[in-house]
Length: 124
Image 1 (tube, helix red, strand yellow):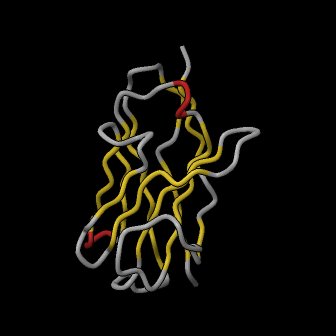
Image 2: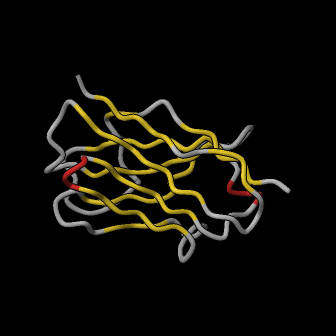
Image 3: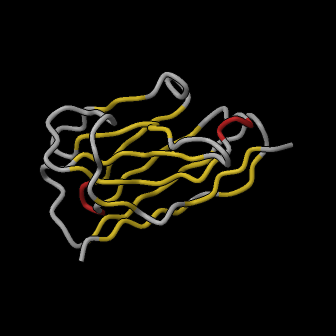
């Protein structure tokens, strides 16, 4: 059974950092890309970042470039999203998702599997 489980969300002040985790189980990630998406209340879902499991190539949306870093731990089947210099506009539910097959890092295709989401709130 394919499963993606996010963790690491919370309430932080502007300028703070958080690290989100996405633990994958039930499938082999070799040909997958793992993406992070977010959705704020009243807004459409937005792609944030993605990584190719095979070679670690990454992609970032302009809104997070230079502040967020995506990485993977092959041994733990886990993808991380390190979020620094957080802003109130980063407040959203963050979802991780998996897409196969993926040969270039992109958020512009349908992702097959989704986690349940984790809330990130940036507020003073």
